[in-house]
Length: 166
Image 1 (cartoon, rainbow, N blue to C red):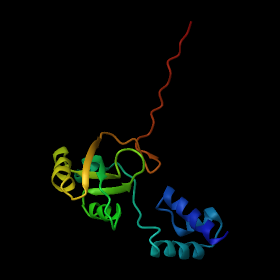
Image 2 (image 1 turned 90 degrees about the vertical axis):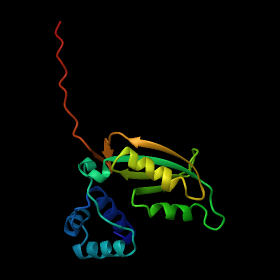
Image 3 (image 1 turned 180 degrees about the vertical axis):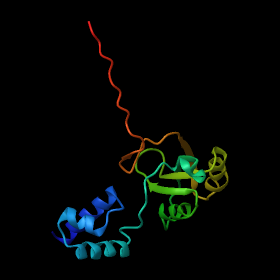
């Protein structure tokens, strides 16, 4: 297996389950453990693997009580395009994810976490909308999470169909 295949296999497996050990990965792809360990270290050093996280029902955390997707229309800067404003927005603690988008009427999409609807509204009104270069925003509050990172958030219930007899 060449290095690129090894990297892709490691990333796929860790993407499915970040708790896999180097030995688990080694067993699955039939590569020596030391090679897997060395490649994981390289991926971490190169910031390809940036971190590990658990997928869980975050309604248990009060700081994640309210989530919103905010679409932002911006005026690109002459010397930095979208990047300068995106870097500035990414520094806010409320922003959990930030994407440059194509198509549609907006340029950036932010995922925001707050303790209340008012908390998110205050962030949009006083911090986001006041940034030079932000032309408009559209806020969408998330009501229920069904799936994240390929994982269903709730087990499906088996419903037995009622038998119909003539």
